[in-house]
Picture 1 (tube, rainbow, N blue to C red):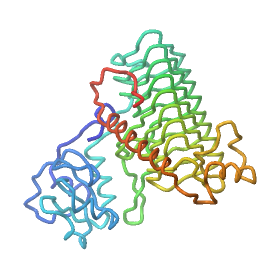
Picture 2: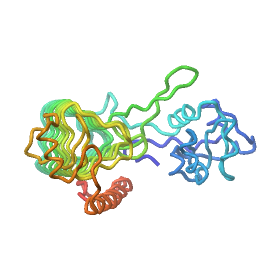
Picture 3: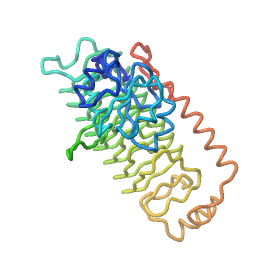
Picture 4: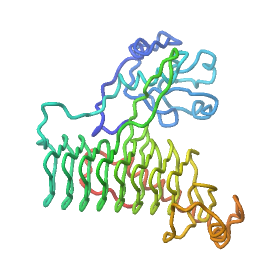
Length: 371
């Protein structure tokens, strides 16, 4: 279920009401009185949630789902397991979006809130510049400074010793210690989740969070979108330049470098120590870069020494560098050490992510643990 610090829970509602709201048809009208609390992906659902089937790519998730109900096309009902109520619709994802709007509402500041909400918690030596706004139940750690006209949304947590510049917007986010965010950055706005219905676009509510670990730097004008359901995670000691776009559900490893105007599309997973050159992009989801991997032009390079100019396109010197790293051409031989390092990172990232995902609203610490 979405984090209650950031989203109001508007359920439960009956399946009959959800069918009316979404325009779906219950396969069995006798199921109309069943109650649903939340939306969730099929792989994460339980008997109180409703999901949707997006196509054959997710057939295994559908067959194994524990969800109480599922939006599905009429010609796909036979794949829905027993115990999961079938909600028939020509546009399952659009129906899911409408159900999400009915069951969850993002917490926002309201016009008559004071600049610093009385329920906000500020530790000692916090510095607030003129025009700062801090929402309900937000927390700011000792020694952190917030620049002019910066906004910290309801429920957010910012760790100790952070430096937040002017005109920064932070929402739906948990931020670690000693994080630096430069002017104009936007953290936690909705990711680009869109589907269609009857030829019209429909926004899909984004119900995840942003997790920024310790010692991260975020440049001016950079946008880090919150997750669609899972979280967007930025690993410790990662340095992000100006005007970088990080989309929803991205998981960025520790010690990464992203130069200006780089972009990561939704659900990309990146290992530790990856460097993205200026104006580079990456759109392949669930992808782990190995040490020394050659990305091609304007890609990412995990084997490149940090002292070199990340803006230079790989030429003869770059090819020699990759050769020293044991890379032959575009797809070099995989060393056993590289495979071992990747397995270690994946296991560690999974453990850290479970901690962030399961951290609840009663957590006493302002810090986001490094792992």
